[in-house]
Image (cartoon, rainbow, N blue to C red; front, side, top):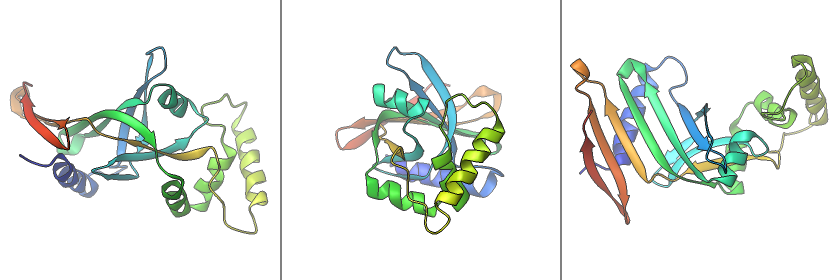
Length: 191
């Protein structure tokens, strides 16, 4: 049996070498408390056996959905490699130290943007947003930009992982791993 995290690391490493833009881009599917689905692209910012981490404004739609229904699915699709990985499981917030450490690595402009944006809310014009950005820039002009209290990370803890490899004539290969106690049960699916 293969460890799904080792296999993920292998495929992700190849994608980091071959994908021109955002090899860490993943589709994040959520559902609200009524079960209505939503999907958007986010960026993977950390991963390992404990889960797959991304960051967001906790006052935006995606965080509201995940706080109401803390289950999600991720999809990595690397067209040039003809591969995709699907990951499903519960979602939990990362601790403050993890969020602070990642926030400190972001560019200053991205840090300021996290303060200026009312993510997912209506915006009258681009000029309004840029004025807020300039206001925040002046506010923090004399020092570092702290992490906003409404901005943090979420970790999807995998319960199901599927590795899909394109094959000729649609005879694709699908390997699945399902959490089984402290380990993983491996299987295959018909294409």
